[in-house]
Length: 196
Image 1 (cartoon, rainbow, N blue to C red):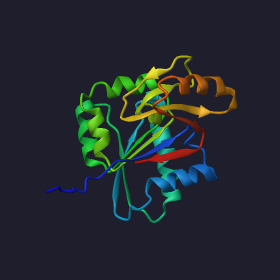
Image 2: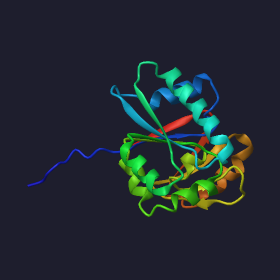
Image 3: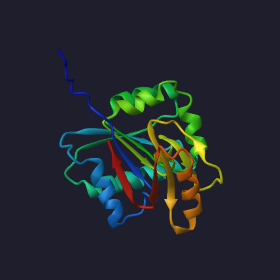
């Protein structure tokens, strides 16, 4: 006899960068985050990829844009703690994890402190990653500031290039030729994809 369990899957929203811009494309992005959610929701806002002196400002901008684009949604905003154990508990309490871009290396340094980071990310209902926050969960990424393809956490079996435009066509071609069995996504600034 076979059993079928209703196992919740994480919804991944991967954004190409410039999430702080107030425009029509980003409005759709912010609305997608809460699509299908009607109850009070806790969103963990993660700024590990940014310098300490920029984090609070970005948190305030994102908070404003999330509320503006979802006026009827009840939102409990939580600012991610630098304390690794407190952060682990914050992830466990959140339904949505929003990881802003910046320095991929800085973000990896924080995430590597958690041996269970993959499981933690997969435990939230919605994972939102912008720029470095998107590429960190791919198998491979081509960072906009580096000329080397880099291996990432591998939560999703994909390859990503962020901040994509026509000037990066050669990088995209190089990324596509590496491990051709993995799908490649060229994420344009202020645009996003959704994966389940």
